[in-house]
Image (tube, rainbow, N blue to C red; front, side, top):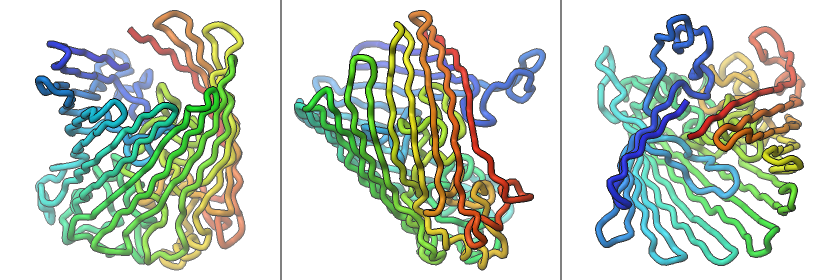
Length: 444
C-alpha cells in the first residue's frame, strides 16, 4: 500500500512524502501469516518505509523547476522505461523550458554513500560512494519527439563494504548486491576461483551512457518509436570493464477497439574471452515495468514482480507482437502479447568458465555469479512467451488487474553449453515457467 501526502504552499512551492507498506519484489511483500512482514497474529511487524520525500520549488520570475530529496529518477525512453536507470533515489533535479520546443533537465543522484561500518580491515566512509550526474534535452516538434541524454557515474571501489586494498571483487556484496548494482556494473564473476578471484579495485570506476530515444506521430494513427543506448564502465582493472549497446523499435497502429503493434530489439552480448570484461550493456538499476513483457522481463505496471530473465534486457534479442488495450465491453480491456526471445552471448564462455573454476555455471546461477541476473541466455538458447493481461475498472477508484503468462524455455543441452550444469544443484532438468496473478487497486 502507498500513501502520498502533498503540502502545497503555492504553485511554486510544495512538499511531498510517499509512505509504502511492504513492496512488490520477492521478500518485500506483506505475506498473510508472516511475522517478519507484519502479517501474523497481532499484526505488529515493522513493514512501513519512506518511498519518497522531496521538495518542489521554482525561482521567482523564472521557469526553472527544482526538486530536492528522495524522488523517482528515470532516464528517457518512449517504449519500455529506461534500461539503464529507473528507480527512487536521493538527489536534485532541475528542469528549464528553453523554448516551446526545447527543454533541459539536469540531475545529480547519490546512489550509495557511507554504507561502510567500522570493522577489522575496513575503512569506513572511504571511497564508498556512487554518484551520478545526467542531462536530458527533450525536443518536441509537430509529429516528432526526441530526447537525447547522457549520464556519468563515479563508482567508488569500496561500495562493496570492504577495505579498498583488500576486498575481493568477486565478493561484491552487501549494499552493492542488495541494490542490484553487481548485476549491471560488472562482467561475469564466479563466486570463487578463476581469473577474477583475486582482482581488486583501488580507484574510482568511470561509467558513461548516452541515448537517443524518439517517436514519430506525424502519421497518426500510425506511430513509430525507438530507443538507442550505449554504455561503458571502465575500472582500473580492465578485465572488469563492461560496455555494450541496445537498439529497439516499435510500430503501432491505433484502432477503435485496440492498438496492434509489432516490435523488436537487439542488445550486444558477451564474447568467450574472460580477460576483456563484458560486452553486455551496463546498467545501474532498470527497476520499472517493461512494455514488451510482463513476465520474462520486469513485472506488470501496477505491482511488479520477480522477472524470469531479469530486469535488464542486456544480452538478449527478441521480436514480438501485441494487441494492446483491446476492449469489447465497457471498463474492461485486455493486452495480448506473443514474444520470442533469444540470447546474444557466446556459448563458448561457459566452457572457459568451467576451465577457470572447475565447475559449470548454471543458466539460473545469479546468486553465485556477479554480473548477471535471472537466466543467462547464449546464442543457442531461446524462449517463447505468450501472455494475457486484463484490466477491469469496477468503480471510479477501484480496478482489478489480472494476468496469465506462459514461457517455454529452450536451452542448448550439449556438453559444451548447458549439458553439464545443474539448474537446481542436482540435475540439468528444465521446466517451462508460468505466472497467474490478480491485483486489487484502490486509488483515492
